[in-house]
Length: 114
Length: 117
Image (cartoon, rainbow over all chains, first blue to last red; front, side, top):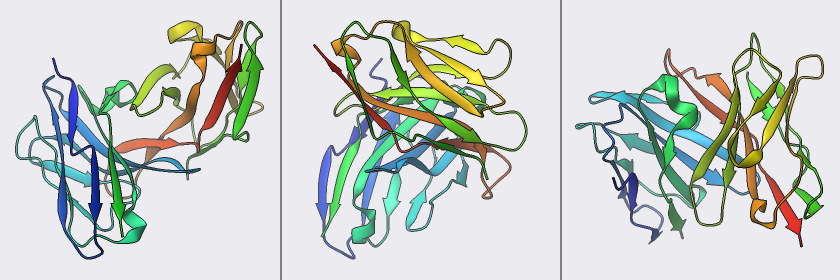
């Protein structure tokens, strides 16, 4: 198993550009989530999904879109990047939302918006 | 709203000494509490959780945490620290989000644990 993979590892964007952060897992997990990590603020949940075709908002969803067309993939889209979205983004997955505390985290994507 | 607080940005402990990383919580109802560890350039790893039952919870790598309802605390502890324990530690609580009927995790800001040889 590759676990949870994220691409790219690092990205620089200009304000207003769009991009998609990729996340994939090969463990047949139903629950997937996206967090952002900022210094001194811990992790904050952006969006999550409890299965293919089902997504919902977390604590800080504004400026981000997600979709879940397959069990394996859960991409995060920035439609118009802003400097406030400079952060480290983590994707995570678990068998179900009930197991989310033991979810597997990907290695992260560092995003810099200029 | 559910929240957790980690009052210390950094904790320094000599190798072999006991360590404590503090966490206090604010929740309505019964709390579901968790501890995670993050090593440099890695994602978070689950250490332990408290749902119900014994107030002393044992987890991975020799860590344990003590749930104290009267003090609304969930401090992480280890009897004898190792240099390899040096990392960033997060306390978290299960949270209901207004976006839907389901829930997520709310994390504290993290505490850097530094174990000195």
